[in-house]
Length: 591
Image 1 (cartoon, rainbow, N blue to C red):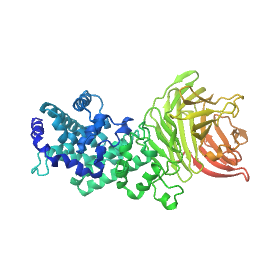
Image 2: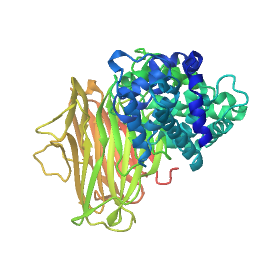
Image 3: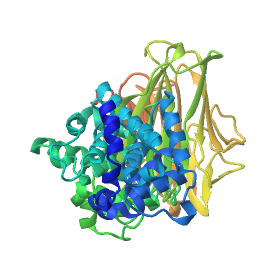
Image 4: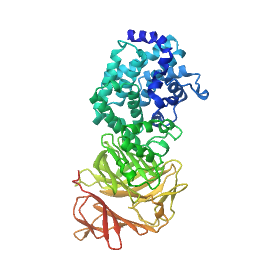
């Protein structure tokens, strides 16, 4: 450690040279403009605009003069406060890891503001972060990439001028290259960990890009370079799928002004395209809301798949097509509560955690397990995801998300079932809260159990399928709006309860006459109880849909004249000739 510390101070003379200060700027090229390369993804991860002192540090890193509005007279104090915080033992975030790279890159300019003691303290702290990351040897951890590979390489650049022969710090060089190679070679683990939660994946992509531009990737062998490109392509696809109107990102509170560094010309999204230009070039244009209206087939076939799902990170993106003008949804089920974002065009209608509560025989139950994937399916008609979670009381909560692509409809449901199919749960009461996104107004009809999302004009309509249509009639199911802007969906029953919700995003159907009905389900001429199987018909003008769900067993049953043997079924229904156009059939035995 003494040798490393001594070298930091000996480098002052080298850092004072113009070439040292411009080294990173020239390597990054256009991405160095105003230091944006060191701010990529930070606003999305933190949910707000980058702090003023980071704005200054990132500019200094790229030999760019800070603006007068952000001269930051307390820069040294801010850096020391940040260092003290990360030394305190609290869990280091990926955003902090990005900041550490910006500080390291800024040293050739920043050192003039630091006395010897301050400079040594900053450099030793950065070196310790790198060493601790290397020693943990968790090769799939995103921190291993940002601190083991990228930060190590920044320290290597600080200690080695262009003409250093031999290198002053061969260990830093070797550690950085090995960390990069190992992270990229563990794609099955490293990419899901980068993607988990959705709001930090841009930081990982930014690090992969900077490492390439700064020369770290150039030192890898051919196989390692191929692994880097494969990792970058996978991460870039996720970044693009999670990106929306004006460069906003899923599961982040950062507004469009805060993410300008990501969406700018030569910004992160433009850099992401380089990993797979054939598919991502048009995807980026579509995602941020600049796709040409009425784009033809050649445009559509150039785009990636419109559903991404990673069962390891437990994250899914479902789009009818790659455009910010259509309804889409993001589902994150890696934590105890599922986070859901449901869009009606460019803006979210629902956004936040789905809060569920359950009582069985008047006893409050709680979740006792993580969410697990039950079924995933995607084709030209629908995107479908089903997950489940164990609860106390011998219950399991199964949750369905379905996007009907052409029809612009979304189906959401919760089913409360006994974990042992032959057991009885008794009396069940279920309560679910869905968070309405900010700047939306929800209008709840006074007579009919339906609601409308309004943002300027009507954006979406929702129907609680299990509830009776008219509020004057009794119903075990209901839908209401809470004072804190949550849609509250409730249901009750015995042994098994199914609580479905239907959303329609097609504005041309809003003025049509509409209705919905719970249907009779029969098995060998016997009408089944709602705890065994349920069926629903939704009608919007002349357009109709059938939804069927088996809650117990999988036998041949009849609903609306259709004979079914399935766990879940949805179809368009033509009342004229009584025909069904199948959208999806899910069997218990489906893989």
